[in-house]
Image (cartoon, rainbow over all chains, first blue to last red; front, side, top):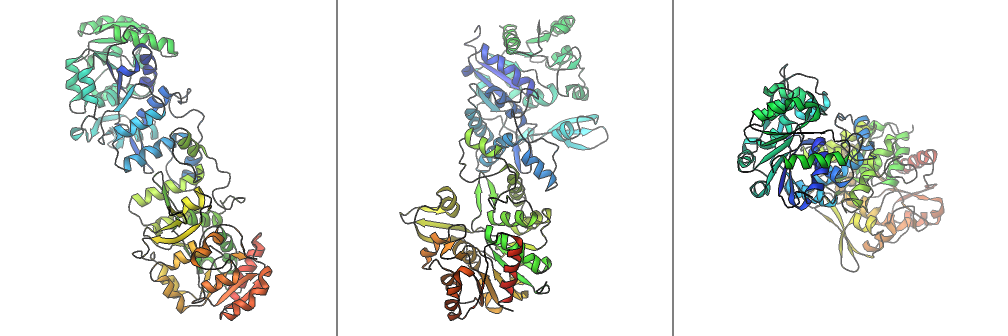
Length: 313
Length: 313
């Protein structure tokens, strides 16, 4: 527990972040970890408020995640979704498992009762006995939009899940972000942080989305920032960052992503496969670390989290 | 099809009504049948709007009912409800099957979008290919309340489902009924009706609830009214009318229920077991008919519906 008394804020997207956090909370006391989670992917479907990244992290840290897919509940069924589609002709492109649905029903109910998302997130995290603190980036509605190369405007989830990220991306933007406030606790946690960690998440629609909430990006100037590359050997480990980075003019490489973050990034962990890129990272004024970043076991993940912290210590 | 061109309005509660209606739509062209359904039992649970009587009738006429219980979807599971209870500590006394949930999710979604319950009911009934017309008694919120003998005020479903109808009943009343309007189509259907049928439903919390919506009771003075006793041999066939009739000063007998309706009732079908009560019914100025009223097959039910219509023809 080398870093047991350092206060850490992690900026997080979905599956990659969730796996990384399982390691981080073994290196740092969970009490000292605040996770600020992207909510730009949130969607309302059939009137239910769904927060995919919050759920993935909660289920992963709470031991309820489907271990094969990396998202959704283990051992889930699709009775409700099947009925909604077959009987009522409702869209079923976004998979809503029956167990998973309990979370969406509870969240929607509490939001409708007037509780902000940050309070609802704490209720759900407590039920899953998540030991670190989970915060949505904001309690306000922010929606990631994709304009396809052929001119259609889609919600991020429509592009990614419904259309399998096939349409070329012309532009990415965030509806509502200018007027969004960081959720209560986010700026305080950043002010108190000894280090900020960028989880291995999508740079464009996870990390940049969090940073676009007014006040969060500026807070990074006052604290060491480290991160783990979500790109290995020029490819995404999972997800569709390779489809989105070009839309913001960034190459699909561990070094290019470091460059995307260069204004505030102090340390950057890249995979052994990308060792030749270490000099390119260093040339940006960012301290590189090279290790195994393929999180196929908690042992690897714990070592990865330790490396990410050590590179800026 | 003796009565194929008669316009019929049926006033209906849940399981007993649903079974009876399966027979009625074999005797009368479904196009000529309008069913006005009790919504005083409706509840909002976990933020979901549940209409138990509408669902029971829709699923029964649509072929999706659980044939053993008589309510809920056939072959349903309880994954969502189990998770909501075990993980999130939410109440699970009202059984919400996963397939059934699709109806509640859709209804809640459409209501939140601003559609009235009558429109939502039509959407759901169409999906189930229900051939007759289903109308909620009102689009306005009406809640059946029970004051227990020990002074507690419960929603009807809390008393009936959660507390298994065990607490003695002091008083029954309807919150919101004074300001409720009949749903669009209800008064027009009653005006156009050649006959009104009281389904074998709970007199106190199904039929009387519908009649309490301003305008509906008065409409019965202009049309022959027939009905089927929900009481056989001094007992309820199912449900808890025997616990409620005493609270409104009515005996638990087929004749006493006819007396409860005497102001507007013209014909009354009682079971063979109650044949000795026929004179008592006749003495109220109501034409009795005696037949088998135990609806254990569609053949019996069809004959029962025919008898109910014939007694006032």
